[in-house]
Image 1 (cartoon, rainbow, N blue to C red):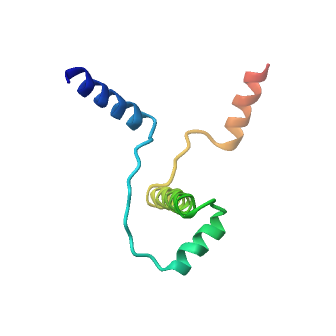
Image 2: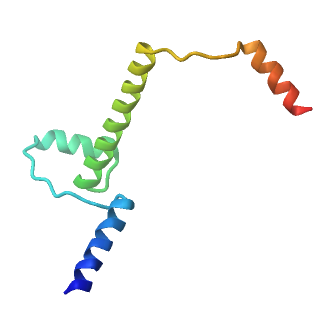
Image 3: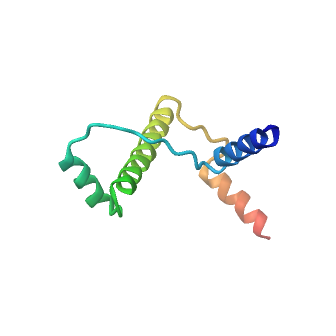
Length: 93
């Protein structure tokens, strides 16, 4: 019993590390919307189509957040473009 419990915890940790934890979800979504998502995402089935669409959504939202962060707090550079070119040329020699 103890070894089986340790084994289950070990498998759970490995799955978390490898990001293989899956969640079964029940949702009420318009059939036309689901079929459109599957078609546009080129998924093999509904699950794959929804996963592709959700991953794309998360990716785009992260980019939007990054853009907002840079707009709110612009990047500052220590050197001008000319100084960086000079530094790069020195490293090649």
